[in-house]
Amino acid sequence: MKSIDPKEVTRDYLKPGTQEFEEEFKKITSAKSNPTEKGTRFFDKSALYHIQGEYRFTPEWLDYWTVGANYRLYRPYSDGTIFNDSETSRISNSEFGVYSGLSRKFISNKLTSTLTCRMDKNQNFDFIFTPAASLVYKPKENSYWRVSFSSALRNPTLTDQYLNLNVGRAILSGNLNGVQDLITVESFLKYLGDKRVSNLGYFDIAPVKPERVRTFETGFRTTLFNKIYTDFGYYFSTYKDFIGYNIGVHVDSFDFLGIPRGLQAYRYSANSINTVQTQGFSIGLNYYFAKYFGVSGNYSWNKLVKTTESDPIIPAFNTPEHKYNLGLSGRDIQMIIGGKRFNNFGFNVNYKWVQGFVFEGSPQFTGYLPDYGLLDAQINYRVEKINLTFKLGASNLLNNLHYETYGGPQIGRLAYVSLLYDWKKK
Image 1 (tube, rainbow, N blue to C red):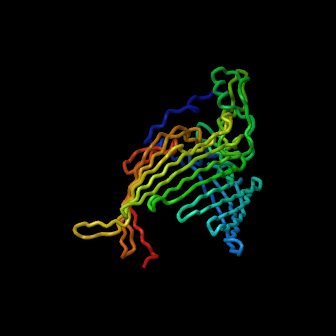
Image 2 (cartoon, rainbow, N blue to C red; image 1 turned 45 degrees about the horizontal axis):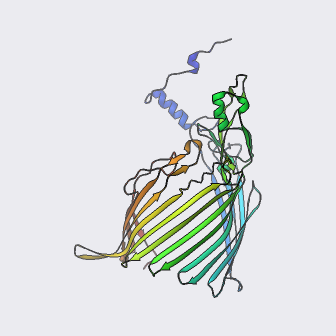
Image 3 (cartoon, rainbow, N blue to C red; image 1 turned 45 degrees about the vertical axis):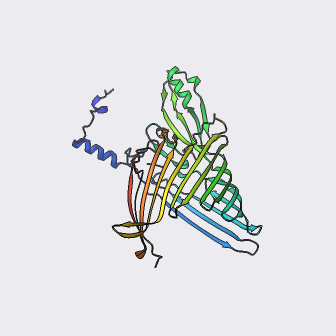
């Protein structure tokens, strides 16, 4: 039996800057990150084709009647670097939908009613119908009550269906066919301590399917004292088959000592076992004064509730519970500079605050995002004679470095200059 030379299986670290390091670096980064080439390069030559048509009728007994249809074809191609595909095994996914909507006014045109229905079909999933209805009542000028019931669907994305991406700590995988005999993360972590294979917990994941939601929404918009514009809205949504993620561990086998063979963690796209509910409300106010100026503010509250906390779904709601905006703006302001009068100056200053929340993504991209506040500002000047508008501004003016996605980059100040020409004006 031939012995193994350690030099054949081990080597010293390559020193950055050396020719050998650069050769290996180029070799790895130029090879595709698939099982065959085992490099780090992503490859993507995907295509999307979409066609849509709509026609609106105006029969005497209705304000309008709309019918329409759309078709979409996805042709992803990543050669195994992103999706579970290859040069000889290409992915093709198509879907289509048809819809119709009616609208009519009642009570001397004070009440507007609408009724719509849509049917969608993806090649991998069944037909789904989503009806909706709404009423808008106008008791007086610039005042509107609204109430609506709607239903909608979200087909699993290409990544929900076909993803196959190794990110180190886990393989992110689509779930078109279902998964069996995964080990729960909790029981596996316990096993690492007591080494008792008999205490491991197993679970299956059903194939991912479309997410469906039903929403009730009501709101009121009006003008107070001819200067204060206010808008209030509330919604309540119930999701069935909410799309999120399940994380589990796959082991090929255990040896006689209880040591796992072929160990791999996975994050699979999955649907919630139970219903998921979200609700929220928003209120916005705008006050205009001194002819040129306005003060605005809005606040929103959003909350997600899983009806059963034992549901293993990771919902990836990724929405802060509380956030608000405060702003001051001016338009068509007259200024005297150097003894000369200039018209049409404007500005906008806005402060935004976002409460911290747990951002749920991939296993390595799940964590808490802290609160942050941002100040945006802009000034503009319109030259009417030549139909030009100059803008100078900055988002995050104070350069408050913050994260908006866990594992993403810090975001700082962004300054910009823009020049807008209006072709329609003469």
